[in-house]
Every structure is written in C-alpha cells, then in structure tokens.
View (cartoon, rainbow, N blue to C red):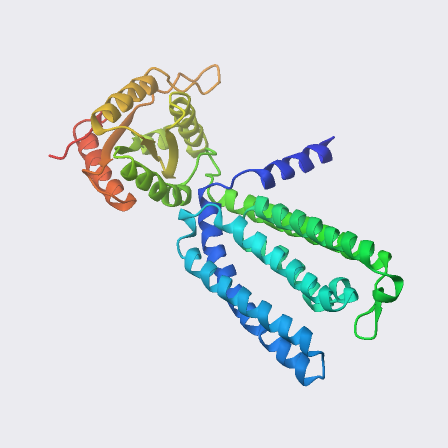
Length: 377
C-alpha cells in the first residue's frame, strides 16, 4: 500500500505544473537545450558529407543535407525564443515536439530511399533518445512524458506503415541489415524505459528543489521561494495595473521567550505563530518564513487594504496565546510587529520592497511593538 501511494505521489508530482522555482530552472534549462540543439543540428551537416566520402548513395546524402538545413533554421528560431521562454509557456512542448517529429521525418525520408533505413538507421533513431533525455533539463515532468509518448506513437506508426507496405526483400539491405519485428519491439521498449527513467530523474529534481524552497521548521515557503515567486507576482500586478503589498513581520520579544522557556519551546512558539497567521490568510495571499523570527505576508492589495488585513491578523495573533501543553506552564502571550511596503509606490522589485518594509518594521518596534506601520517617519 505504501509503495502504491509513493508511486501515485510520484505520478501526481510529475504530471503537475512545476512551482516557481522549478519554472525558473526550466526556463534556464530551455535556453540550455536550445544551445545544445543548435550545436547538435550544426554537427548534423557533417553526416551527409561523411556519407558521401564513405561512398554512400547521393540520394541519402541529399536528404540528410536538406533535413540538416531545415532543422538548423528551426534550431536558431527556438534559440531566439528561448531567451524569453517564460513568456511562451507553450515553447518547451513545441520544441520537444519538434525534436521528436524531426527525427521521425528524417527516418521517413530515409525510408523513401530504402524502407529498411526507416527502421534500422541507428544513428537517427538515437535522436529520439536524446530528445527525451534533454527534456530533463526543462525540469517539467509533463514535457518528458509528452516527448516520450509522442516518440512512441510516431515510431510505432512508422513501424506499422513500413511493415504494411514492405515486402520481405525490402526489409533487408546490405547497409542497414534485416528489419525484424522483435528488434523494433525492443526499440519501442527502450523508448518507454528512457521516458520512465527521465521522468524519475525529473521527479527527483523536483523533490530536491521543492525541499530547497520550504522552511524545515514551519514548512512554509522560504526566502528562496520568495525571491523566485515575487518577480512573477510583481510583473502580473504591473501588467494588470494592480497593487501588491508585502508585510515584513517580526515576532515580538522572541529572544526573551527563548531565554525564558528555551530554544526548543521558542521554535514551537514560532510554529504556533505561523499556524495562526496561515489560518487567517485568504487563498491569494502567501506566508513566507524569511529567517529567524521574521515572516513575510504577500497580499494582492493596495497599501490601505493591506494595513487593514495585517491589523486583523495582528489582533488574531494576540487573541491566540501559545499553550505549552503542560499542566504547570501558563499560556505564552504572542504578539507581532509589522512594516508594510506596496508596489508600485514603494518599489518595483523585491529588494526595494523588503528594504522599505524593514524600515517601517523598525519604527513599529521602536514605538512599542504589537503594531503595524505603513509609513516612514
């Protein structure tokens, strides 16, 4: 049962849309794939030349040369688009489909000269494997499964077409050997195994990156997550003409709490604060642990409405003291101080907003704590 749940969780993760950290990694991966593709396609221009020098047929060389030119043109186009891949969410799927379909097209063109070449050209067939393996660099399991399934469908259809129209004599040639059903089934199995292995690698990468973006104590998103997520939120708010507010929160008297009840209990108090805040958030608001006793609340609200939300959260926290869970210990009163900064008036990037919110947080602490400040002195 545990194994089935693990497999189900893995499949669910692979099929789900990656989080912001993985999307950022996937964007840089798409650019890397585009550069690798350009190098590989440029090297394909050498294959027809090598075939000609080795005494191969001119028809095959012309097909190879023409196909190499076409894929090079597309490779340059994909490279240009990859520099802004976050703006083209369809791009990884389109380029993966191109890599697979280009391989199938070259095999089909070779088959027009010799039917056995369509299924027994090992050099070209290996491009299927490369196309699937390169999807791991996009950090998106959906693209891996898409490319693998497309390769299986296209190569399977090519097999069906060749076996349907070829005579036994046409399935044997001195250059490519004999085409057998057993060999073709083995190749289809290899494509399926390559897809499964690549998807597993992507899943492992997603788990590791997910762990890097999650705070180990509170299980909240951490600073790494915030630095990757905020630019997208700010960009979306700017495009829609909306405001985005950021509240920097500090647990009041945290050092005194640690000194009085110990660091382990202090960690429990911090987790208590995170739970109380998390339970009070709306669906489109995010709570992040920045470090130590500092938390961040991101709200798609203008500064005035953000102040009202944080005031409500401040009162909520004050109304929920921490219960140590022991008979002799009294509940610990928990309060917070917060400074709010809003985009665009206080800044258009994460560092400026955090800096302005930090100055206002210091004002809140200086004025007696347990308050929310939205303006500088």
